[in-house]
Length: 411
Image 1 (cartoon, rainbow, N blue to C red):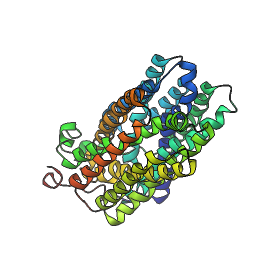
Image 2 (image 1 turned 90 degrees about the vertical axis):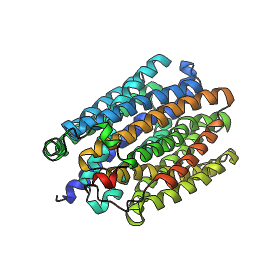
Image 3 (image 1 turned 45 degrees about the vertical axis):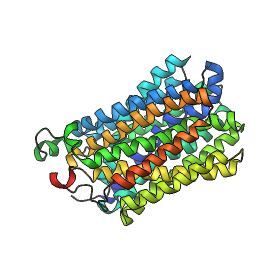
Image 4 (image 1 turned 180 degrees about the vertical axis):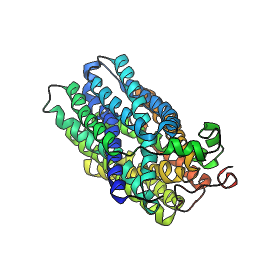
């Protein structure tokens, strides 16, 4: 297979923008929640449910979308998913209470979850093998950079110029609709359906087949821990900063920008793993993240230090996520199983770490106080470190299209 350098950069750029909008639409509600909860009469437990229901449907959609994209092609799934979640984010502004919010966010999760696995594998397939870690890092960096970094700043800025928080969601929907049109024109129709039907073994792409690969199971368990930490902090940190530390909305948005700045880890750590190996980079990153999270409870209302601590923690967290869902998973299975395997890792991670964990964290915060979220994030990071240190097998820097034999890749 030959690589077109020009197409590689165009495709990765568009896929990154799409994932950035996924992050914006997903996390935009968090910095707006201190305002929304007053209008709609919501509490911390409700916030956990709102975050959790999106992650639940996101996870389910990721698993099914992975198989669907393997069968009908990634481009079709990507364009339709991008259009749908862009339309749905606008309807968030129409919500009048908890039930309507849960319904809208559940539908959004289906569309956003359908976008993620095909976009990751499309990036891997478009990238030159020597740049797989770098390109997947660039693409995945967009979600936390835009969603956790620019999102809070954009939300607070828009609140000052639009009539109410309802309009912020309407404005956020527009870029995705434009991008869907551009993506439909620029992205190539992948050959996966035709090629896979001819070259893959019979019944390829089934979940039981993917689950025979030990690395997929380990990566999935680790992903649950990564997302428990990331989503719990992303969902509840705005209220922790405003309710517990009594920061202003402007101070809160600036501190949260540190979480978005940590998205650079998605670019740097996968690229380093291309050079030094996946496992060593992941272990070092998780040790540093654990130290940073351990320091967080001792931080007072000091925006500068809070920014720095969150930047370091999310840099490391984002980096290991990028390695796991990109080269570590796609390199552990045959090519015809890549999207299905990625869908399982992302999907199960979202259901357990992105849906159940925030729901539990919200209930605990409602009863024990918002500061309990820091202990939850710390425990999840410690569990992730143990899993990676003991469970991840170093495959070096595998080529994404290498066909591993059954004996090599399976348990």
